Length: 461
Ligand code: F0G
Image (cartoon, rainbow, N blue to C red; front, top):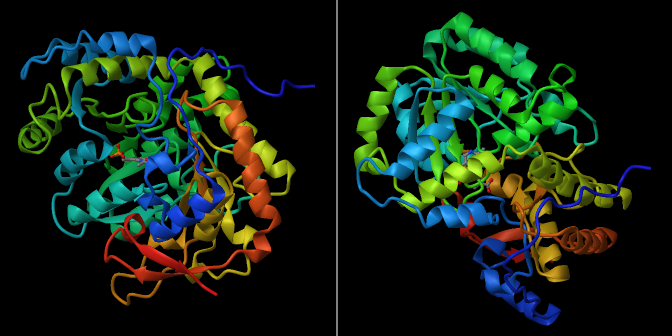
């Protein structure tokens, strides 16, 4: 029989108390929050699975490195430490820090858009990436393999590009109109699903053939490399670092929210393989946007923490436990019949709210109903990734229908134990058992853009 779980390769040195308020208080707090868990105070949340971004725990190596941060405005020693680490991992020539992932996006993406009406193609753009593409006057198109929309179907790499769709789109829009191909690894929006090395290589080959730049949106690139190491036959004897290097060989630019696989609470990265002109353009633009190029909106101590965190995140023992936590929660839910994106991905379990509550139509937000009920059940905060987040058609204002209505249970790194995850599973299973009683929601207040962050809702009768 296989082991029940991978024992954490760390012990706990500092703790932060958790408090669970009463069920009656949770009902009241959720009402006051307009049935939108983004508006809850974190002290009213028992287990916070809103995001894995900047919510993880740092190691004692990181904390001690922070004491050695060089806070010089220009030419900080901490920058050169970070630069060396990133060059070693990626093999790229140029490195710029940024305050977080979207900071890196706001610098690089506009440099790639030569004129209005250009396109970026991705397996799946993350929200902020899409926003920066649109702000730069371009359009964002997704060509992920349709397998990722079938939550019950097992596929080892549900983040893969559909290469046929990709090539057809390049031909249809004309290669000279494609500003770049963005490989989101892992594919966050479809469940933290990995992209295979073979798929990345094929994308790179096609991009080179048509003269298009490739970009890795690699917030979770180390988790992606781990999946490659265990699922891709030709890579099973390679180290995580070797796989990561081959992933970076498939791109020209690396953008990273280091709040995920950088194991820091704040930070981001830009790395450029060899395009000196692009590097200089980014460096120039950086000064007014993020700050001087050797600090990029961060303190010297943040650069030190990132330099160490990037290396720790490539440790296979760390990754084996990290990925296993997600697998464990997923298995417990599946065993009770809860429909989830299968197999589980790198950073979260994605529950299929559309399947769970078929009686609630998409425009009444079935996944939001589950998210809210889970808070009432156990003080657990999850997030809706479905029609509520997707929003309206900008022209007709009609509510768009998401491919999937998902509840994301996002697991912060090195933060919760298997016991916490058991509690989460028990609560969600309880909600699942009374799923027929759940009701949909409608808006009381609906902001024009990115409405899910600040909307006020009310339950329907
Ligand atoms: N790219 C991906 C794939 C992401 O998941 C995120 C953030 C970003 C870029 C932007 O990075 O937040 O540092 O500015 N994802 C977080 C999440 C917010 O909850 O999934 P950021």
